[in-house]
Length: 116
Image 1 (cartoon, one colour):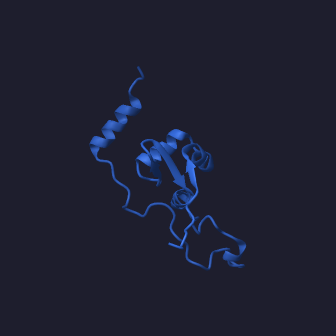
Image 2 (tube, one colour; image 1 turned 135 degrees about the horizontal axis):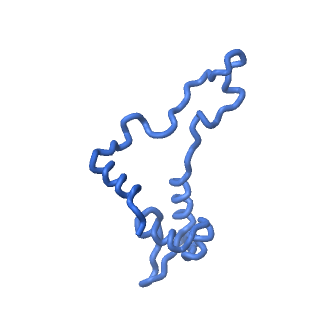
Image 3 (cartoon, helix red, strand yellow; image 1 turned 90 degrees about the vertical axis):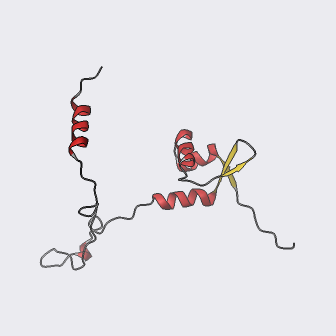
């Protein structure tokens, strides 16, 4: 009973959306889709902890590819080519979905249809 743990700081939706620089509707959508954690106290009041916000930001962080992070030290003095192998950027070959003829037809109808 002598161990007292500090409770996390709770941020309401307005404070959290300002911290994340997004609209209240966007934050609510993220919560409903389960993309960001939250604490619900009572029937309606929703709070987010700093850990919820940091976890969301960490999942949204994108690390750069080696292609984009070229420095002079990565290049050979004589040929200008890299000494280290580069990491592939984008989707790997064969991982994107191919459109069948029905998808292509539907997209063409959307693109070329007249606006009403």
